[in-house]
Amino acid sequence: MQDDGGTANGGDDTSAIQTFTITVTAVNDEPSFTATNPAASNEDGGAQTVSAWASFNAGPNEGSQSVLSYTVSNVSNPGLFSTPPAVATDGTLSYTAAADEFGSSTFDVLVQDDGGTANGGDDTSLTQTFTITVNSVNDEPDFTAANPATVLEDAGAQTVAGWVTAFDPGPANGSGQGVLGYGGQPEQCGPVQRGAERGEQRDVDLHPGGERLGQLDL
Ligand SMILES: [Ca+2]
Ligand SMILES: [Ca+2]
Ligand SMILES: [Ca+2]
Ligand SMILES: [Ca+2]
Image 1: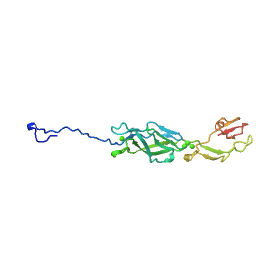
Image 2: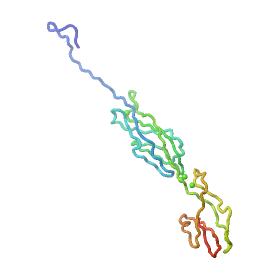
Image 3: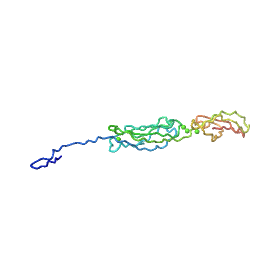
Image 4: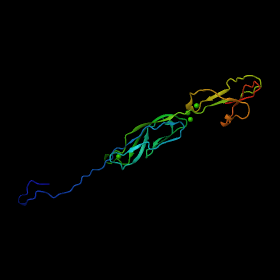
């Protein structure tokens, strides 16, 4: 600095130089991430894994920071899952739908960086909401029937009312389905291949007229 006494007669109006330091302490900036709704999966599709689902941004000039954790919350329709959605630190989304379940679920996600909250820092992102969709897949139906009474050759066409005593469209969430039709074809003799493939054999003597013995495999 200088004083106002001037420099006449060898005066010195200027001080010695002093050095000072200004320190700006880093304050953690809020992180963020980008992600979109994952592609739909199918009922009974097993464990789902979406690599690099979330992309992390630590904040301005904070490229050295990394993900502390992703947090998933507010999972709607939790019965849809046997393992609810989760996001790993590398951004991988994973979930497993429960057996025979289908539909959709929304869930919230936020990310925390490892920069801490000292000096008013913000280590937590805004929350974003996403939707998981599981497509329904029709399950195999079943029915209950017993061998009809044997009839004699040349007895003519036979009708067994109420032969099928029960129809099961599949797991409970397939209820509402009805019978489209019953199919089958007569086999004259020998084992019935289609029944054998399914581990079950349902045969009924059919139209014994015309000197022909037959079976119906359903
Ligand atoms: Ca940050
Ligand atoms: Ca199923
Ligand atoms: Ca189903
Ligand atoms: Ca079904």
